[in-house]
Image (cartoon, rainbow, N blue to C red):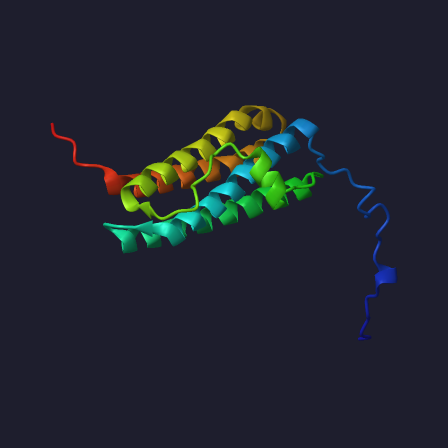
Length: 175
């Protein structure tokens, strides 16, 4: 029996080019929504770091470590949002000037902050980020359910972080 070698010339590749096979191209509305999410997630990552470095007071270590989890989640979600934009034809912009000019989550400040006040501020910033995601979700879902699924994951993860961090300041409810 004779051994045969397959070469690229032996394989039919007609029509198998990037331009010959249609892909999904997002509308400017979808990319605009993802841009808003990207900006707020990037800001949340940066504001979380600011809090991480400057908190002082009771439960410092626990909150310091918990903020690392929020920061990691926000950074990962921002990367996922930017990469989704690229995958569907958008161009993400998370330059510092863009983030500073367009974020909706507010600013943590430059000074030291008590852990209790930091909890309130970071939970509010996290919830504002979720508000942005929820606001852009339905128009995105109407156009591209796959991208909406990505946003669902962001919402679930951020709401969990808000709960975990916010619990630092809660007292048990009495029945």
